[in-house]
Image (spheres, rainbow, N blue to C red):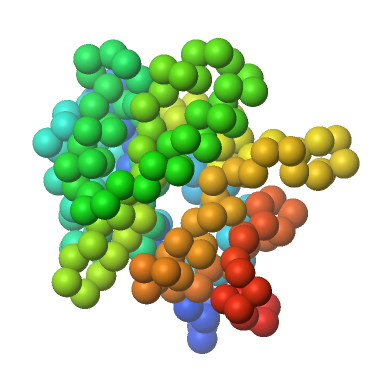
Length: 208
């Protein structure tokens, strides 16, 4: 299912794949919370027009890998965000599936997410989230595994702030726009009040 979140003429747009990985949600046992949480956060955080391509699937490694490949190769997503399936249980196979779809690992994303989560719970060290690039002949995309809980999704994307709004620990999304720049994707602008994208001065364009 495709959902156009914003449709503004004459502006670059980004295609974002959202993948919620859950045996029970995908089988209808309970309602998925991952994709709605991601859509809500992206709507608040991005100034750049974007389209979401959503998938709700089970914790099956081959299915996850095939879904990630389809979102990049066929749907031409520039960024793919997954939620769920990153713990140590036997059914948690999202990291392995992601690395199988990727062509190069981006370990800093997982490292930073665990650093953020450790501010809240010691069990953050059990999380196995990874980031990876998938590069094909004429297209590249960034794939990032996120936690399964909506609150943790927002925390890892935004980072931690004090009561005055000053950043204590940077969220991972601050690095996403420049990464997309470097792999040839669209220029992404963010809402600085939610998360401020970091770029070298030479890479910053005037705000639209």
